[in-house]
Image 1 (cartoon, rainbow, N blue to C red):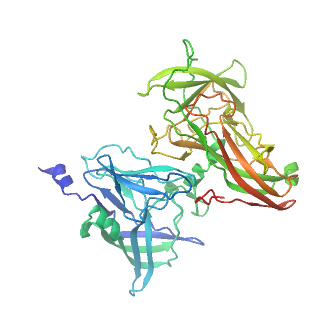
Image 2 (cartoon, helix red, strand yellow; image 1 turned 90 degrees about the horizontal axis):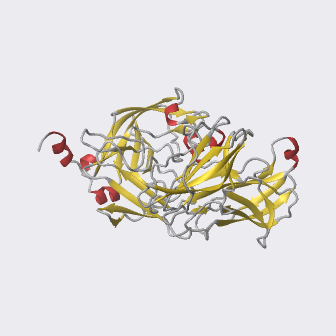
Image 3 (cartoon, one colour; image 1 turned 45 degrees about the vertical axis):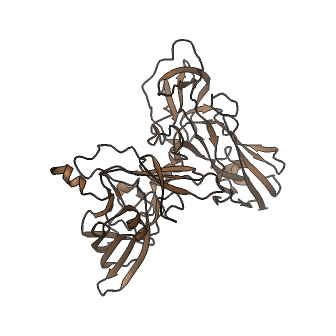
Length: 480
């Protein structure tokens, strides 16, 4: 054995590696220092794969390592949320006088930014690209391909910046004991020592998607649906399907709405809406599978309307049928400017007796896999086809569009515009429910339609233009 094979054989299951022993970090005014030391975790001869789940919103998140297809319990307390391994690293920062100015633990996401580290490693990784999650996520997959690395600092998570003054430091970064023991990491491969210079901010690094004084992560806004107003054509103008339409037996999508979250109440921004009070919220409908939802729209001659078709696939992913499922309409309003599939979801505000009192005018949607909800379900796609509207929904000149919602992912819409949010100006204080209904007119063909409704309790209070809203947790999930 020689060359890459010999080197690979000596690799531990994972190890901690520094790209350089000399690191410069920026001190961002009124913010602090982001602790990206350029350190990476590298997998050895075999991939490391973790499945994290919770049975319900009343159960904790549990993570297990898959080894040869069998689940192995992780160290107690290592997985408590969707950010990855909790307290994976320990970091100390010491100044020139030997004074310790920083002593903290840091979580680690196996799906972090990385690439292969030796020539014989696989050229692609099957695992998702990050550990970002919706507050109502049910399952996640984290993995590090054999011979690949992952950056230990995750820009997609809300890391707390460090309060460290300008100066020279020594950083000691090590894998905490419970992980060293579990993965059998040798001492020489579990820690690094770095020379660190903290300097005044020299400018933002747009490669990490950091804007607004380097404090706001553009990556997080993608997951909040901030690109819902942008679009370019996805596919060339396609021909309408030929042959007889049919809905064959076999796999179909299963659309499920999550409870609403990001719930606020406030007056409108300007014009007549400024005299009204609106309850705003975020809502997500996801596909639990086992088949992806694929919709093609074909434009009616000279009209701002498309005929929509749903396609069906067998267990091997081969297209085996199609059926007309309604229409797509052009929405040229500010914040939209793309094609919407009609009747994908319906939003209603119910009173304490769960009778509808207000309905959102939002009823048409452009589908995009903005959030990972459960990548452990059967046939989950870990690299969904479209994650924002740069890849779907077309423009005003489009003759056809394709919209896809892959298995395991959901589409989040924020209800921030008057007419989409609920007008609560004339409602009395008290208990209400935000109801989200997926596929309300049953235009789409699903494997199960008995799970198409979700409710989120809200309690309105206050006075006109000073309304308040309380949002009780959903069992263990406190995501108002």
